[in-house]
Image (tube, rainbow, N blue to C red):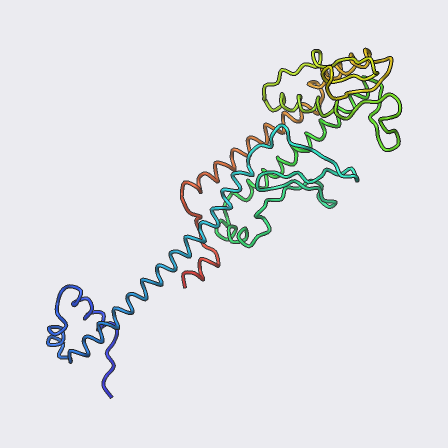
Length: 304
């Protein structure tokens, strides 16, 4: 049986051949049959091409893996934006806050933990892989701090909404309609009054210019209604007391900036902006690197 030629020797033949030495000359130099040299060169070339192909496959797989992880970073950047001033806060029939959809996340009420922030990627396999890559990174504590700050700010907004409602009731002496006292019966304040005053105050609290002044927008109607604009939405129904109700609504509006709930919105907004900016800077650093540092189990399997 002929002696098996080691692959390392065949690689040397291929190297010589690639450098321009003819196969016949290599055969003469190595004292081998020409067909043996040619076959050895072919085998070495096949091995090299196969290794290059595998390396390309591994490279492409790692690039795809990195792109998937970088997608989470991009979505976290979206989530870290401050909620808009016109963010709708709705309540379920139970009285609990309805889910609040936000970019790449949502805020939901749970019976165990109250309001919580759920990121769109958080329960995916990719999220777990990102955690493996960034095991000891400070980004995780910053994400937690951001979530806490966001919940505190949303709670402050809901608190302001309730505070405005109570203030209007206190100043006007009227109640808002409910299932027991529908707005078709008796004097009442329309919930739109809270929505209008809340929207204006939130914009001001968040530093957004708003020149709305109820002094110029609240009108008394001959039909018993007080409206936002002469033919606008109803703010209250109080036949014979429209002028007093109008004055009380304006008085309530002017007192909103001094409510403790308003101050809490301003404070929590500042806290949220600070931690959001910190989180975005950390995410931007990863963006600038162009890759997610570290390794995960998928990286290990791809690189086998």
